[in-house]
Image 1 (cartoon, one colour):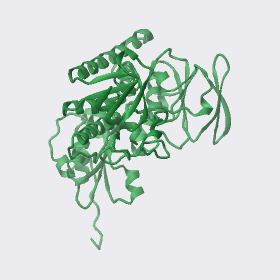
Image 2 (tube, helix red, strand yellow):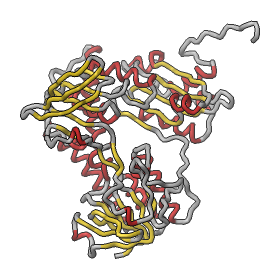
Image 3 (cartoon, one colour):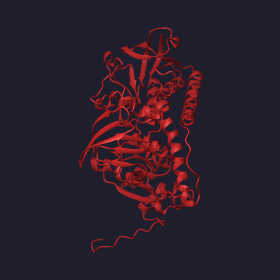
Image 4 (cartoon, one colour):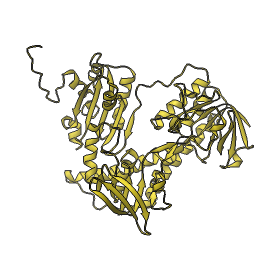
Length: 477
């Protein structure tokens, strides 16, 4: 069996690459071990987690309506129905992808692909009925194998009570108590889901703050709200070990106050993800893998092997589905001989908690680390009419601006719907807009989108929604 292009992996990056390549006139085959397209994002990541986070948000908003004198009574939870609804969402999307592949004449082979050499894959497992031989040869392969949850050996104790994010999304039950090891975005998102469904959630983070790497100004409002939602948040605390006692999991932790033993019904290990670059036979090719396990690529997604390109999580940080999709399209265009390159100025990131956190472009920490001179303008949502009306004043919109050119370099937003609002900032950064371009574009009132413009007005000194005293003149000025 031969194909002009083989895409190894059917996730957001893989199917985007395959569909684009087909649209550009190439013969394409997707090799995917799972029986359905969609990869981690659709089957056991982004989509199911956001479906459950929607449930959590509705529960939270219903509770908050008490401030308006509206109450809905005690929550009744049917976990089986909720799980079925989540699976229906997944089935709808995977079914759509199958139809799109069929309409584009993209062949889908359900098997695990192992490189025999730079132009041959051995097909193993999966569904043998979907392929007529044990090997497939190709002119070019786009590697899109993604990533999997990291599970350190010390936490892998063979207990069903210890889960990774994939296990947590199965929603087998709502435990009375849950420990989340790791204060990153996956841990906080899943912790939010389980807390709103009724679990007493505790978070343990090794570093001195939640969401390491995110802007501290954006994290503060979220931390404050999570302190009320979660049972406890431990910072600068190390997990020493886990033990399944038969009914619960005993967890030994060590923090500033010494060692302590805690007990939980379930434990969610959420300490990051690792790229899937081993066990694929890449040693039989010329592909180079770095110390972190990422496949090395250039801005055209080309590896050191002329027959193999790589995209998505396996090709480096950030591990985000939308980044993978764009890289997949670039790879397809490169194979079509087009002058394509992945040169994005802003890759947005979103944490879908409540409040949400989103950022794009340069961050304050990166500016400080790299010695980039920036001016920061912030607009507090306490001054937003829309935020006050809906009771969501814990937000903040923040711009990073080049003081010499007034060009926008980065943006960060914390608040309800931040993930939707950040798209405007992405466009502004990509287009090289100045702060005046953003501030003087009329935004509808009353909306949270106004805060994007109002933060720009703070920078320009034209803000009317907040008062900013004029700087006093000195003898030298």
